[in-house]
Length: 72
Image (cartoon, rainbow, N blue to C red):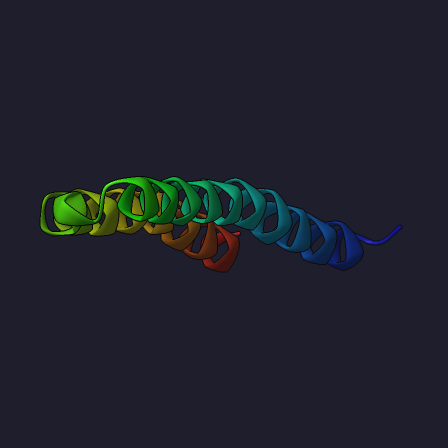
């Protein structure tokens, strides 16, 4: 293995690992929010903003992984 191949593999692994966890978190957040809204439709206004904030924070982790991959 050449150093260039190791660098490319490290970048790929960073994006793969850094993208899996936020994807799972965003999916679970949306799933649970939709389930809660389905059970209690009057709470939709109260759940929407916290749901979006949770998704944004989870997405930030993926952005950090992307930045680290670019730095590598």
